[in-house]
Image (cartoon, rainbow, N blue to C red; front, side):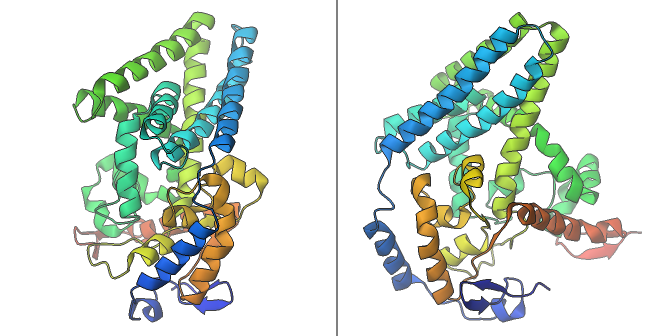
Length: 370
């Protein structure tokens, strides 16, 4: 049982405790309208096109610098440093397609889609069309065991009811998931490549011609350049390291946002605002954190106002904190290290009964292994 946490100056019960779960959940109706009006009146939902153009310029310079270093170094093991850099650049470009998908960059749907496809398909080899559908479902049902695809696509489990469906390898991962979750993040980029190809060849994309052309250009330029400049062994090492850094960066960006917070089922008792806030975790901001996380460290504010430009999320933070404190809604924010400790502790606690010989049945009930 976890102790209550503080939101502003009000002590509130932690989700999962009887004090919280048994309370009558009031509709936030008018309270939410008032908050939305305050945020809108503050100009925090206004688009920031010039500032986004500046971010695009910075991203372009970062990628251009990496490419220049790659070709200048030539067939050298020093290019592995460039591989790591390009992995970080890919992670930074993911913020562009993320914000474009939320219509936080441009008013024009065409410009938003173009930016999304360039930075997802062309730069990273990820299907933008698949990602938008996937991410919208996540925002509608964060941490819902059946409806949040971010939970369903993981090898680790967040509830004992998920264990029985795991493969033999998956069950091994679950037993050690508090460690292997972080280790396996290096494959996150490769999994997104695989998903893009599965969506494409499975006929599940709305614009398969455009997406397939951009994906093809990505693979031809990326793999063609690497194997043209580097010897085969160095080329393979470059690709693997670049993908490992990219995948690890992707995973470390998204892991603290919701993992280890309450999971929900069809027996949902929370209204929309509480559902968004209670399943989100902020990382305490500073300029370095804001840059590395691209605004995703303000996860509570982002889930309440998905179309808010990332530059304004920090300004919305005190407004949202005050709203949560007044309404007795837990607002959870921790430092960067504590956020990952939270995730690891949660995964450890979920898998501990399994390591002790208990086997979860399909309904999630624990039974002693025969």
